Image: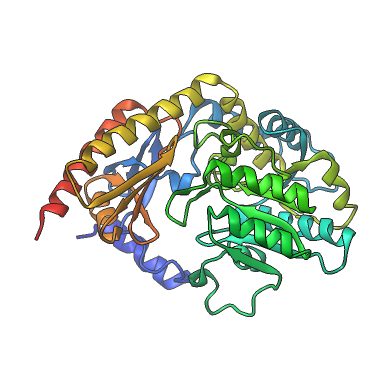
Length: 405
């Protein structure tokens, strides 16, 4: 039964908002502290979701909060007509943690991928007018703008919005042979874009051979290799960016979600030599990379530069995987546990949406994607105490649900 406070919020939601999110989960969070969220009635929840891997430093992280309060009092926005010291400082940090290159700040992950698509097509058409096709992979998710949808090889994302932007080819994920055949036989391909861990696709991880083949084959055939790090970047997997665990250096990466710790910001980061493709007036954004957003990026990146944080992410991820794998040995409904760092998927033999709803009722925030995969993506700063609390709820819930006839 929902409270009077929540009923009032729900009434306004249904009266004044588009209902494209359907019936939201019956809670309204009003404050947060570390890895905990509190609802309209001050009930406490353990956050194993981070707002879809966004609140990378958790809720109310002191250094992050101080930095943004100071920036709010100083200056928020002036536009990209002018130099911006916060933007330059944030880009320097991205370059230092990724690879030497140039950064273009935007407002979201799908905008970062749109910029990457434009960059790739500009690159291809320097060679030949017909070199404009982009390869992506089955199970991918690259956003909900027309470029992002066209790059996403999931019909449910594109349904009802056709015709799509032309020039995208979809191949099986982790199939080196199919990729090699396509690149060798199709001179129209200008780029390959992929997630190395498919988030919305169910935490499916690329093989090392597949990741390395993307970069080597793109180099061989004159195409750009673009790694979508929107969900996997910014420390989520235990390294600053997940591509670093595959021994590759792509042409470009796209970022968002955890990049701003909860402030809307995205970025395209590309090798230095690609900067020339975006000459004056060829791409832009009003809000992208404003002072406030880039102050958030600075604050997040400075925490990532501390080795202790990334070490902790890797250790906490291994601990969760070990606990859930132990649970798997007792509960056959758990088919597979996969992930890196604090980016973990638990594939069930049954639909997982009800599990996520029942977890919420017990004070644990998790998510179900790809119908049967429970995602665990807590703040990178989560304590072992909070992990144990959340896993205790999850283990008990799953044992009860899977024991039912």
